[in-house]
Figure 1 (spheres, rainbow, N blue to C red):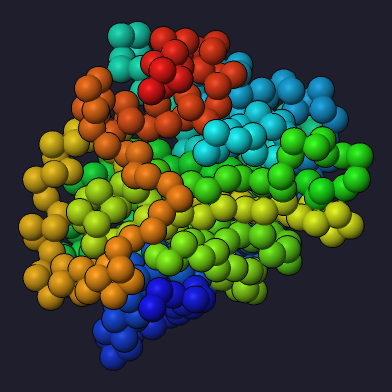
Figure 2: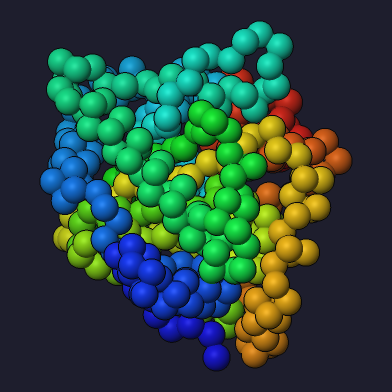
Length: 364
């Protein structure tokens, strides 16, 4: 039988050698059976979480003309602001408003691969409009970078690999990303007849791991189990929701599973849903041949067998979303695959900066 709830793991257990083995056992179960988990005691001050929530919500209250100054279409990095219905998932329009940030980098040198355009400065709101916003989110992304690196080392240990097994897939100045999201409620007169309550459609995260701070008490996040059933993942105080990404699934050759998930729009009268997901990056210049020469061959036979037993027990794997982070005729690097994924998701950015890639993606 497939999972019917999302496990809650306590990171505090890893700080004592007597309790760490129990955490790793729980984590292995979450990795090979669910692909999602709640994580508590992540060693980030509660007051910083509160600042992140309050300043994230306040961003959407600034005048539209100020938000439009940060329009994602301004730059080829996919960093910045996008309004409701600017993003697409699973061929349908997503009903959410957002700003996307990352750990900052200088603009890449001329002649760099196109996917190096991801590495860029952020488009920040004016300090006069949102004082302290940049400082709070820069601090939060820095701290979450440390959390994600520590958690990734635990993933390695949980599946029988050395703690540093994935380090070769990080740059020394690794780029991580963060979104601040607002899902408007489905108020009468505020939606047209074609919209079906898709906050964001069924998808899998692309990066190694992601960490979602659910900032309001709305239900709406759902995870698909191996029987095709949608399992609620409601807010749990004091936790982050951790999702395993396609990069991690690729590196472990399917031992760690990237699970399909979606967000339903809040019902009329319940107000907007806010969330702040942090995405752990992977080295953009890594090629798929590298990914194929490590991973499952190094994972102990016992762990591989456990994953196969999960698949067999559920009669195969049911998925609304196919694996998209893969090598192709014109795709050899991880960054190339991620660029095509982004162009597909944000066609207006694609039209302005990557028209040839957009045409190719549409043709596929």
